[in-house]
Length: 407
Image (cartoon, rainbow, N blue to C red; front, side, top):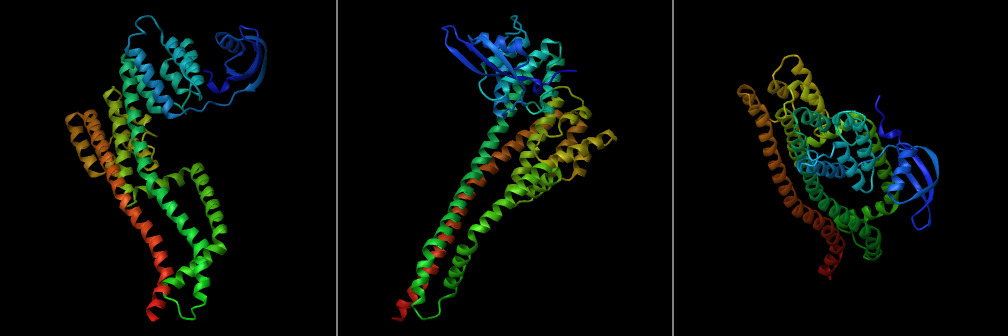
């Protein structure tokens, strides 16, 4: 049975450097000899080494895995393996050059597994938090076909493309959300700090106030009396809902399904999921993976629970002899302009290229919709901000204007 990286051990060490200065610290390694060897390479003479217990599992970031994939592909494409550098040596080189995070531990463990004769894809599969099923499946195909550098390059390209899309989507959403939150904070500040001053002035008028003014004064009283408890209650409800969604797959699927129905963002999220799904399946088929086997690696390829469940249903229909296009149509979440070309490609035997073309088209649609969404948000945000602040100011000065007209 292969040892997982979570069985690494934490050590506390005391020692001295080459100049005789005392040093101490903590290190995570597979065993005591490995810890001593690592410290020796760092120029530390170990005096005492104390075992602290099993180390917690490492946490890796998606950007770190992408960089590792790109660097390893670069080593392989440079012909270093053919020049005598084994894969385990390349992994040791990369684990030593990586800084921070848990990736150096993961890469080091993969290298040790390879040294014991474990295939590269199987060693990666021992760390599912860092390397998903699709990643491991493509690496396995690349190992079998002798095209590991090309597969790793393709993986790095796809991961960088997905990260770029996420960054653009995050940027498009961050601006309007922050401006709306700021406008709400300004409005709340005016209701709490400024409107009560006007109320004191209006009390001396001795005349009926306009309906907008009465509404704003009542809103100010409500915010002043229940505003803080309401914010606390909403925050608590939000935290509970987030934790519930994190622990409940059904809740996450319901949230993803609701997101797909949103007026503007729904089409964007659907195009993003279709692009990821089509590119993942097309890449697997282009690498030589049989269609039925490819679906074993697509369970979490889209990041959307609705499409993930549809993938499982499609796989079951394929095992029962149904065609891919018919199974996708029955799933109910794929647009017709995606299903129809796949039906044609099944007949012509060009399914892999059609899927990759559809992924490229969906990526282009995602980019266009992100740009359109960002362009639309700016006037909407300005309008909402102007309506909130402007309406508040007009409601407060309306009685004064009416009084001036009477006088």
